[in-house]
Amino acid sequence: MLAIKSFTISPSFDGLILQWQIDATAKYNFEIVRSESPVFGSSAISVLTGTELTDPSQRKDEETRVAQDNRIWYYRVTVTEDNATVDKVVSIQPTNLTISRVILEKQATALKPVFGGRAVTLFIRKTIGPLCPNCWDDRRQRKTKSNCDVCYETGIVGGYYSGITVQASKFPVPMIEKLDKFGIANKNMPMMWTSNYPELKSGENTGDVLFDTVDKRHYKLTQVEKSELQGCLTQRMSLMELSPESIECALGV
Ligand SMILES: [Zn+2]
Image 1 (cartoon, rainbow, N blue to C red):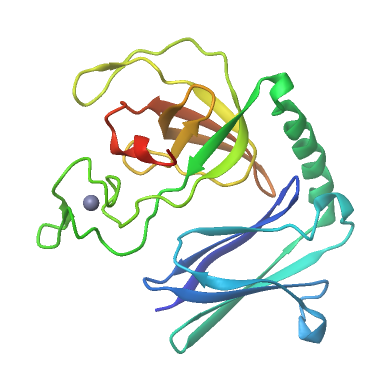
Image 2 (image 1 turned 90 degrees about the vertical axis):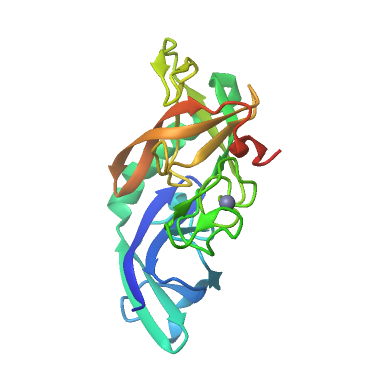
């Protein structure tokens, strides 16, 4: 049954990040409206509309800059799938925005190239979508081939969403030696941090992929620690370098 599992707002340096999770298996239509009152009425402003098949989904409302805001904003997301419609309302308070703004501004400065920041491209791993016709065994409910170039080892067609390029910074950590599942020492496991967009997920078999535009290598996000105030503010990423033969290394190249 169609349901909105969550709908959250978090501040970012250049707008507000709206993120939602839907219980839906097919494409659905959504509309997000903004208002100063929880009674939306005719004064509500339509912020975003579209068709989506992403879980979770995240968009930015770039018209509402944190820096300009000294008011409470209410957002309502309405989701329609076939004949079903559901909605959810959330609000964001100016007090938290002010504190978050200061932190985010400092972060944006610290992530500039002059202070060691670097551009990375993040590929969000799909968790819903059509199953891979090339490698998915319906009877056994699992993938049957490795290095599949249709689903990039995810079992879902396309594997990852289009890359999002953001600034990140590398921690000066010593090289860590760890044996992978094939008993091979994987020495390049750096740590980086970035701001709060896009929100990332981790895990050796479930994590998103990072492409470092400086060293031209692909990494799997094995762990992501998030610091939160109202919503996520900073993300500290543990990375595992993918071997050059990995199918994920074809992403964004
Ligand atoms: Zn496949």
